[in-house]
Image 1: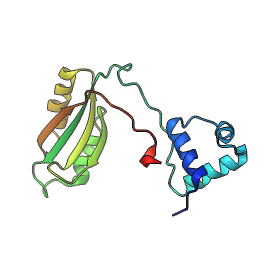
Image 2: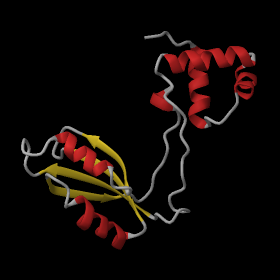
Image 3: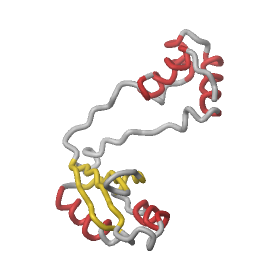
Image 4: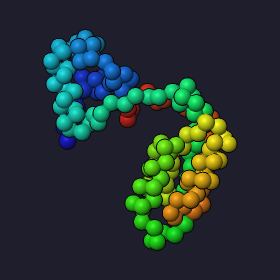
Length: 153
């Protein structure tokens, strides 16, 4: 584990807001040289703190107007391996995230669909037919707000 100073925290916050910024632009913002900024970024990557860059897609502009969080309880624990379920559910393109959780449900899925009828089709034909799929609970996303900064930095 590495020790992070205030400049590292500011760098992480800047990258969390916009990971496309160049080391030069970040350096100007942080009052560092481009090489010093680049070295800090590399150090954070090597320590596993920065794990790649992502593009945030506008799902609605791509025709996916509905996001549903789905709690899935496996019907027959022990009969179907968790790996088999995870592999099968991860192959469904509409499933954006698969989280193995502790609680009432075994898995939490983030599913996107064009509309509610499309979600129903995905649920009935793809998710409910998975090996071991049992009880499900759906929560439709109404709105989403991004918290400022990663981990409150």
